[in-house]
Amino acid sequence: EVQLVESGGGLVQPGGSLRLSCAASGFTFTSYTMSWVRQAPGKGLEWVSIIDSGGGSTSYPDSVKGRFTISRDNAKNTLYLQMNSLEPEDTAVYYCLRGVSYWGQGTQVTVSS
Image 1 (cartoon, rainbow, N blue to C red):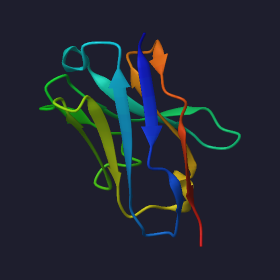
Image 2: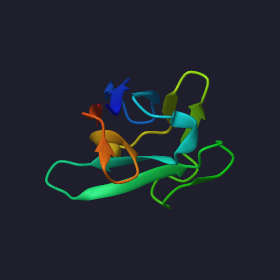
Image 3: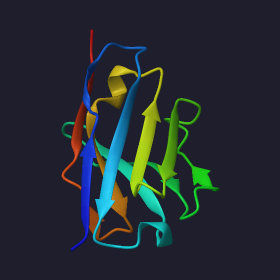
Image 4: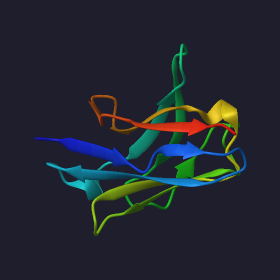
């Protein structure tokens, strides 16, 4: 059974940092491209980042480029999202995904003073 479990969310002040983790199990992690998406209150889903199976290729939308970094540790079957210079607009539930069919339960990130 594919399982994705996010952690690391919380309340942070504007300008602060958080690192999200996504522990993967039930599949061969090293074989899959992984991504992060988010959903802000009352808004639709927004893609945040993507990383290839080997970790050598990443991509971001302009809204987070230069502030967020996606990475993975294939030895630990774990996906990460390092978020720096956080803004109130980054407040959302963050999900890790394998493809479009498998999602974690999400972790809440709130950026507020």
